[in-house]
Length: 313
Image (cartoon, rainbow, N blue to C red; front, side):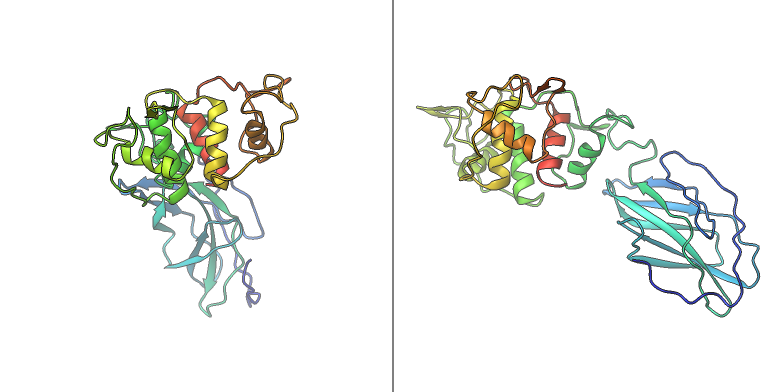
């Protein structure tokens, strides 16, 4: 909520030129102030935003303050920029959206109301963190959400890519899920080689075994115990993995009703698929008629969407 300020003894007039920049949401309020936002990201995952505006022609203007925060109309931080008509806010997090508004104050420190608000999502100079995720891509927000939470580091580093159309394998899924469950700083204990087809030296062995210890998976074969790490993950299987990861290994969804045209109530994963829909984690693969496409493989883009919705990222 905006804090109360007494009305200025004399009106403070803002005389700013409107600037337009892509992805900005510019609205005029009582005092009109407009920004040009320029993003300068850092390789460390933090970023800075530069804001500039035309100087006010009102009398006795002593300076300006920039207010910003993570929620619309609520500003946790304030920077007094003095008489400068520009400022740079640093230490911002890539993937987050920030909201900015300014005030002017006179020589008696009487402060104006907030200006119009400008919002901006922290990406990079090209409005894209990943070289292969173009602005407006259907899963863009979810991909950046799991990147911001350090659930993924992408599929290559130079250039940074996400490979959104590649299919997710069961070993990759183990890493995605365990980081979503326990947080990005979680480090599973060393693997012991409990799966016949996943030696302890395998790159994802400790993540796979942790998924097993968390009772999220029982493997793909029991005698001998196998995990099938290179097999692709289907949308049917993903429903079970996600709900167990979210609600715990003992979770049992209610009986299926047959709401999907391609998933009869008797289908082996029907109740899991329908519960995933009820919780808003999936909208299906087709609306009319409503379908889920249970045997389709999960892409990395779809995985990002599943995770961001399931875990509220």
